[in-house]
Structure formats: structure tokens, C-alpha cells
Image (cartoon, rainbow, N blue to C red; front, top):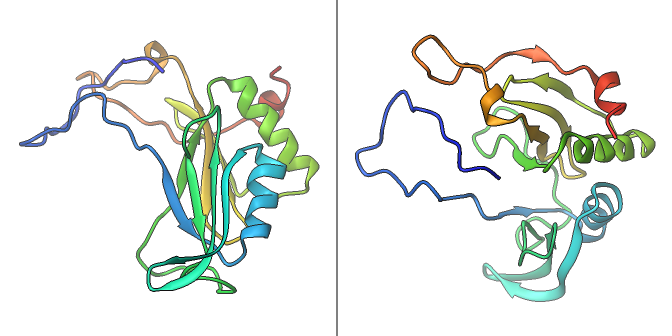
Length: 179
């Protein structure tokens, strides 16, 4: 990932260091086996750790930690407060989506082809100018953005030099031809 950056429209009084990244996301799930089948079997994450009947948050449940490329974990899942539970309904505050960044357009296309082969619904296809994105929901109803960043030099900008997101539709047929 490049160290390119855009000029913010407003700066924090006490800004975080430029190298700060979101390291991992931990989600509640109703069923570890079901979420494992999707994230490992369809998306292609590796299993780092899988634990059963372990204590956590005042109860006992299962946990699963997944990675791409050997990191300690990019995604964590647990059933401590959610085993057998329904998805979070619309109309409440909470996480909007988890974004998974792929290194290349070809990598994104390969995962989208697997989703299509698994007959997994693609909820939205977007070309944001800075990146191309495919939005889906996981088995628990958590929304995911699967995307790749265009090269920094190609990101759209306003006349003032600030980032200018686009709102176009992603050409799925074109994406799927990417090797």
C-alpha cells in the first residue's frame, strides 16, 4: 500500500500519526460454522485460531480468527452474546460495513467470481472514483465492502485539490474479465 495521502477538508486538533491503520474487526455471529464456511470457503480467508466453549464477556461461546497472508487476524468472530441470534435490524445505530481491501483489481475479480459461483447476492456495485467496490452481506447480515484502490494518481480531486468521490456504477462485466 502506498503512503500517498489527500489533503483533508478539516484537520483534527490532535491528529493520529499518518501510519495509523485499522488492524482488525471483531464481529458477533450466530453460528461459527456458518460464518467459517462463508469467510473461508467462499471469500478465501485462512483460519488462524478456532476456539470452542471458551469464556468471554460473562458467558461461554465459540471464537474464530481469520487472516489473509498470515497476519495474526484481520477478522474475529464470536458467539459470546449472539449464538443463535438474529441479524441486527435496519434502523438502529451500529456498524455500517466492513471494508476488505484487495491488492489488485484481479484479486477483487477472483473473489467476485467465487461469490457468483456460490450464487451469493451482490447487493451493490459502485465505482467511487478512488476505488471500485462490490457490496454484499455475510451470513449474519453484516455488510461487507470488497474493493481495490485505483492508483493514487488517478483519484478524482476538486479544483481545490481535495478528494472528490464519484458515485458511478461499477461495470461488473468489465471487472469479471480482469485476470
